[in-house]
Length: 135
Image 1 (tube, rainbow, N blue to C red):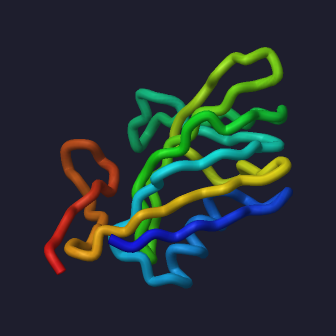
Image 2: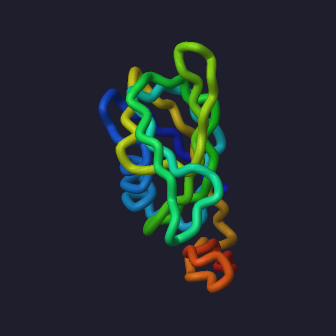
C-alpha cells in the first residue's frame, strides 16, 4: 500500500484537485483515509439519485469537513462529503464540482497496489459503478 498526503489551499475545488492529484500520481486504486479542513461552499448531490432525477444542493456557506470518503483513480473519483455549518448542522452527499476549500484541507490518500479500480455502466443502477480487477 502506498500513502499520499496533500494539502489544498483556499479557493481550490476539492473534487477537481483530488482528480488532478490522482492523475498526476497515476493512482489506480485510491481511497480517502482521512481529511480535515473547511469548505467556503459545498455542492452535493442528495440521496436517492437516478440518472434522470438528481437533486444537487449548492450551499453557499462555510463548512467544517467532518467526513470525506471515497475512491480515486487516475481517470475518475467517487467521493462523499459531510460538512458542519456554523450552527453545527451537518449535511452531506455525493461531492460535486464547485466545492471550494475555505482555510485548508489536509487529505491522506491510500492506494491498494494489488488491484485496479475501473468504472463501467451498470444496467441496474444506470450509473457507472466500481469494478475491481487484479493487477
